[in-house]
Amino acid sequence: MLDKNNNSNYTISVDLLVNAIFDLNPEKPSLYQHAADYFRNEPANKQKLTQLKAEIRDAKLSLQTQSGRSARVLEQQLEQLNKKYEVERLSQQTHRTQRLNNAIDVCLDILSLTEGADFDETQLKTAKFLTTLVLFSPEKSKKLAELHHSLKPAYKAVLSIRVLDRLVSDGVVKNAYIIKNYAVDKRYETDAAHYECYTQSVILPIMLAAIFQDVGLQHPALTELLEGKEGNKDRFRLLEKQEREEMLALNYQYTIDYLKNGLGCQQASAEKEHDIAEFDEAEQKRLKFQLGLVLDANSSKRGTSEIIKIPQIYASVIFSTKRDYQRKNLPTASILIAQLAIKKVISPQISEVFVSIVGQFPLGFGIAYIAQNTDGDVLDFYEYAIVSRLTPPKTDQPICRLVTKNLMFLPHGKTGVIKKVHNLHFQVARKKLVKIDPKRLAKVMQKLSHNYRIEDSKPIIPCYWEPHEYFCVQGNQNLWSNSS
Image 1 (cartoon, rainbow, N blue to C red):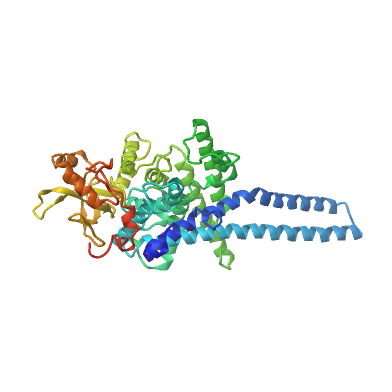
Image 2: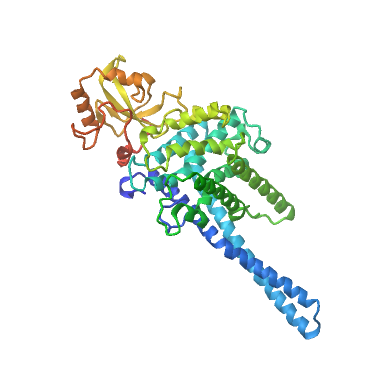
């Protein structure tokens, strides 16, 4: 995805993590490639075990009617068949466990990049991670839909955990399983035993549910549905109603299958039977909770599942796979969430919490705003900023890194709140610049744009700007430095 020579170590680490989940190169191993392999091989693997079971059953039946030398021969055959079955069963279990362990390792890597020693550090690290994901995406690219499809899983997983944290701290969560296993007052304690307990019981199943929410799309049947038997269809095309309904049903069916059978439960490393039984019981409860999230998120049911459902809806706008994607539409993501809440499609309470976290302007969005002097007077030009922090003071007042000053790009700027009256996304701000000489505004655009010409069709009063090229310069990638 990135040129390692022109990016910071942090940016490269995020890129590698994204690829570990969903690499666009099918030749490289990733979590979604593991899922594709499972779907492709599972029918044959299941048939192997079914066939061996049938042979064992037939051998046992034959043994009941034999005696002497013939019985001994059948006993030897039965022993070999049982060994063969057990070897195959353990082999398939090992592959399943390895897939699950790989997925857990990726989740833990995400947590290390997005969580800190306390709430404030976690908010900052999360903002840095989510902003970086958005800035990986150029406004235009032939493979933009494919890129967005690969960026969604990690994005959704992190947002889901931030929603979980807020809901628990606000006392909104009523789910008995979460309440039992998640102690809000110990959320950032360094005690390893407690951290592992709530991570294993609550955080990991939510992250796995979010990451693999659409993993069923990797099934060969859905690949054929989306791409055609000859692979000549655009899998991101606008589907007909019947195609879409079939796609959603199959995706859900195969996603549940993968979470339940392709990943399943971890194996206990304990030696005592009591400890093993206790671990297995906890894992069964964890899997039940995880499957319940996906099941309910796929229905009209409201409640705990919205921890992953709302981030999924939001991410479908931020990382839209529509071929007519336009960056200027990103602020509509939060508006969509609010509208669905008004219609009671999703919980108004959880929706309000979510929007308060992300604000109207998503992390990584380029804000164009009217410049002011030290006295607060409006000037005759605008500057650029990038939304870089979560939880703005008001949803329509994003916290940004100011990346230009006096029409010059800066590698290090200050962090500030952009008020609605200065944000050119809003008509109230745009009206303030209408009176400015168009030639003056064209010169401003020329200074702040790459390869801009006066005769270009770009509006001279932009409602946003595209920060991808700016961020692709290594020196500009630290939007969260202490200089803020």
